[in-house]
Length: 78
Image (cartoon, rainbow, N blue to C red):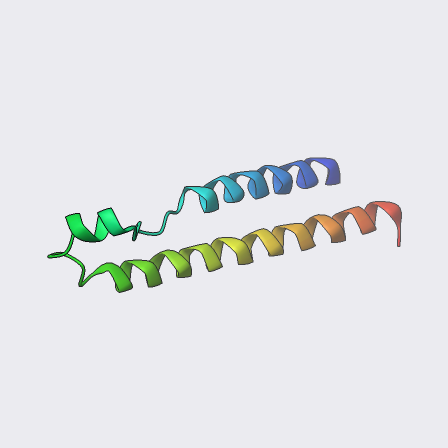
């Protein structure tokens, strides 16, 4: 039973890591700035949103790894 819980948590971690890699900050290269000079006003807000999403995902990854650690400790009887 605990093996299934550990496997579920590991699957959750891998999906969260994939989701974290999928979040992208808006590109701010020189060519991008030249092409989007008129629509730059919402960029800082989008950057804040993406950073907040990444922080939430990273917190969930940390919680899952701690859960796996406690499950493994309970299996070993520590």
